[in-house]
View (cartoon, rainbow, N blue to C red):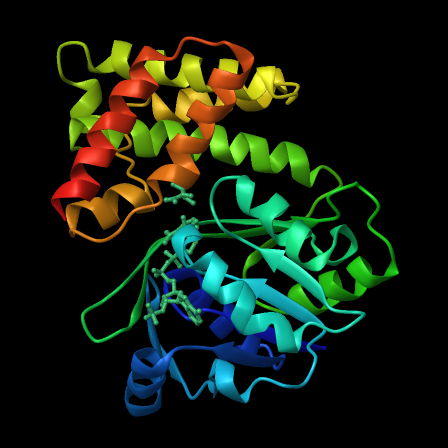
Length: 304
Ligand SMILES: NC(=O)C1=CN([C@@H]2O[C@H](COP(=O)(O)OP(=O)(O)OC[C@H]3O[C@@H](n4cnc5c(N)ncnc54)[C@H](OP(=O)(O)O)[C@@H]3O)[C@@H](O)[C@H]2O)C=CC1
Ligand SMILES: CC(C)(CO)C(=O)C(=O)O
């Protein structure tokens, strides 16, 4: 199976490297600066277990012509429009496209561009970032990759994808309910991103302030109300688990959006929070805490 890993940043670099190490035919689609960096330094993984290095197969958009069996999209949401143009020559009649971005609206965007039958659901759970010389830093042992058909029909094409992905040493989850997984991931990640960015701290710092617990719980409730109104039927045990995870003052948590914000980088504010607000507005829901988060993030983006 020929796999094109679109993007070789924190998530693409990590999951792509694991697949390449397992012997899969993985090519990383990169832009000029990253191309030079990876050619010079190799693809370096710094994990809790140690440091590993591999020589990745690289390609740039101008050289893309062959079709790939699987394209895994790992760019940030604000880079998706350009990326869709770039990968178009690599999308053939049998290509499957698996985005692992945070949020939801990229799925419809990809379906509109390439067709419903080409896009499968995917998401990742990992705490990763890029270091100063482009090394991929996996900050905790977490490295889960979920995927499955958006309509729940995990047919023969999906079985082949699963067989290939399963060869890599990550925690793969072939899901019959990828839509539920996506909604639940959004609940976790948007609550975490919202509260950490607004309060400028991790969950442990927030939960030990006056009002921090109420803030976190208030944001969680608003987001749960929005995604429930959008049709996600909360699985009580799962939402309870997410709530407990976020509310545990012993375990400090942050999100990738918060890490990007603290480093002054561009952030996926529209994809992670703005999209929730649009959905709330359409359903006539009041979301005062999310509105405050949204204003806060917009001001951050204006000031960059
Ligand atoms: N990091 C994490 O811990 C987690 C991230 N996520 C989500 O995963 C997604 C990806 O995030 P992450 O990997 O952290 O992001 P990064 O910024 O680390 O990596 C994105 C990469 O995409 C590359 N890129 C952008 N446009 C193109 C293009 N047209 N062609 C080729 N490469 C391109 C960028 O390259 P360049 O150097 O050229 O700019 C960059 O290296 C986001 O939606 C994020 O929210 C989800 C869970 C955890
Ligand atoms: C859920 C979490 C926190 C880890 O995968 C995440 O998605 C992120 O940091 O963006």
